[in-house]
Image (tube, rainbow, N blue to C red; front, side, top):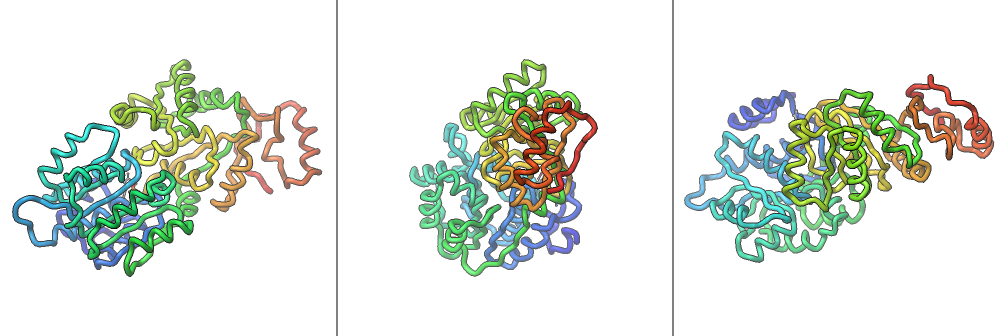
Length: 417
Ligand code: AMP
């Protein structure tokens, strides 16, 4: 299947070609025809699957085919997304895919002065990408009206709810015209999300791009058992031995992220942190430095990392394992984006083993363990590769093995339990 087969108009086909896209990703292949027919869509998919183009391309096409407005442009497509980084990235995608359409988009988000954003809005836009808080704020101030919105996209709905945006979303829905095409995207579908989707969508079709497929097929994963005290040293060791240019490291906390960066800088690794305590300008600057390789290692918390889209990000390191299994899937989806492939390495200390269990259950695979490293967690736990099954008998057996000198030839051994 090619983009030509999807019935796209020439200005969009040209833009996709200029972006270097040769064929649609699975979500694009499935969602674009549904959306071009004017049907509502429920997309169960995470960032990294190509979902932005899956909704941006048909919206651009349908907007291009509408009769030309006279006078001031009015907001006809509204995309609401949880984070500033995602909003910026979606705005960039609309600009890229829509560069030959003459349609204008702008992006609004909190944490920065509003004047630049309100100036853009005054000039008139067809497409508005927004985070919920700033959107409601500017609606309240009279800079934005949603009465002309024909296309509404709620992106990353599960993260919206995690971040406490439910009331904002409900307020927004009340302000949208009843006649509209709605698109609802979420990586996971717990009951709360299903309920919310029913409030937004009319008759809809569903496209599911399963994260576990994405995980299994695109990203090579491996696990290191390592004590907390050795995690930074292991990280430095890996960075010294690997050639990857751009490495994204996940830390569970902002404080932890800063600490990792301090230690990396001490070890002469160019690193920088990105998290909610950093100003918007600082985050943008750091991202730009990471993208142009002035900074090799970006240490991020989950929320800050949601929108990071760096092509050729070949390595993701989970310095801390997330306590929510789905987060693992989101994280490793940062590498091996769309059609490429990547590597995700995870550090697991004793206290994180229950999280590992949850993750492996979700992705329905066991992550191969790398035993051959200088900081094996043999002080507190049996090497996991030897956990044939987790019976007491075996645990006892392994406790005695732990006292034996370490062998260095078990590289990348897969657990068998
Ligand atoms: P998204 O899931 O929308 O954040 O997209 C993930 C990444 O895949 C972005 O870097 C896109 O530029 C890229 N991408 C999206 N669609 C395609 C495609 N059909 N071919 C190649 N790359 C793509």
